[in-house]
Length: 95
View 1 (cartoon, rainbow, N blue to C red):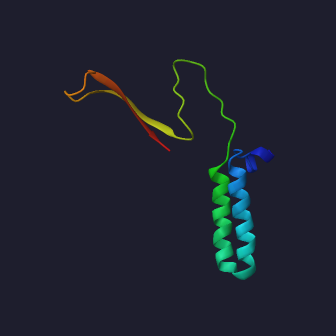
View 2 (tube, rainbow, N blue to C red):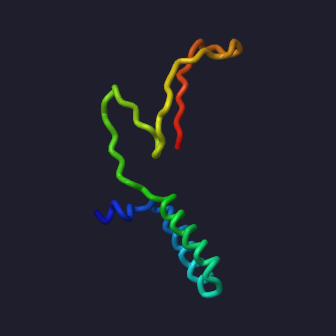
View 3 (cartoon, rainbow, N blue to C red):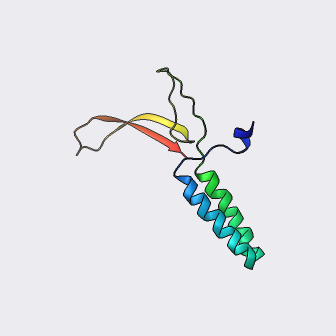
């Protein structure tokens, strides 16, 4: 349950999170308003570097979206005449 509330973060994110926390505490000594804004930025840094467990489906009938995106369209489209290929697969992913 603890991992649901506070998921682990990627190892590269620890230095950014530490810097953000340090700057937030320093600014809080001088200004509550700017410190509050930096608290929000620190939460965003934590959320940005989260690294949740991912479970992929090993089946050819399913397509797994990269990151936390949502696949909205997969279709064949014709290419411009200048290109050699006749068709290509068009994928639209919203993150």
